[in-house]
Image 1 (tube, rainbow, N blue to C red):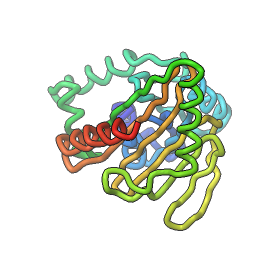
Image 2 (cartoon, rainbow, N blue to C red):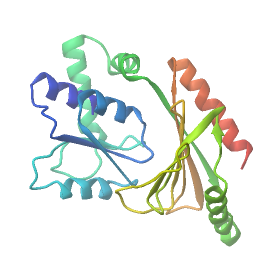
Image 3 (cartoon, helix red, strand yellow):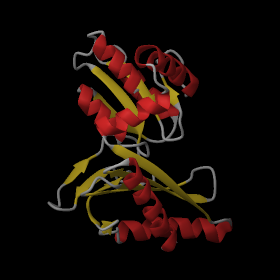
Image 4 (cartoon, rainbow, N blue to C red):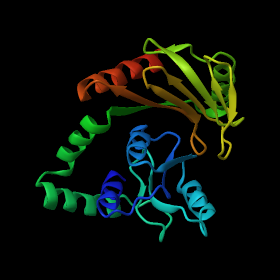
Length: 237
């Protein structure tokens, strides 16, 4: 996505009528890149059918699609085939980086971290099988809604998104705003220092998943935060 935005900017094709899409559990680095290039970033539920729905909603308008991605490396480079295809995104980006800068895609990624922020992600999946397991997972979601965490990694939780009620709650002001997207049994917690945790029961497996995203002062700092957050999540399960 950064590759396409960079190229569009170089060619003078960005005019404020472009947009990108990411799923609600995808890195916040996408938001940072979109903000830099001044393009709209939409969020949707996990699954490329939701990405395709947003693209369909913009057909016939002056908004231009740039790209979309999800945390599990799926990417949609163009709107001609509306399903994930990471190869179509990675190959031209790798070739362009090598031809124009003489470096590898990984080396460019390190430069992007310096420019946009040191973002790192993690995932904890907890399996609870059988009828009792399913009931436990649902009870966990009820408990999280009733008693959300007040801080994560020592940083205060400042915003809570409930994708089931489509409400975003500003903890500091008490203000609630409506979220424009499809409903799902998902909670998101955001902290002052840029950490985000999403908790989501799997729709196809007896699992509850915790998606973690942090922003550090360096790659090492961000990785250390993810490791500590992973330990903290596992400790309360």
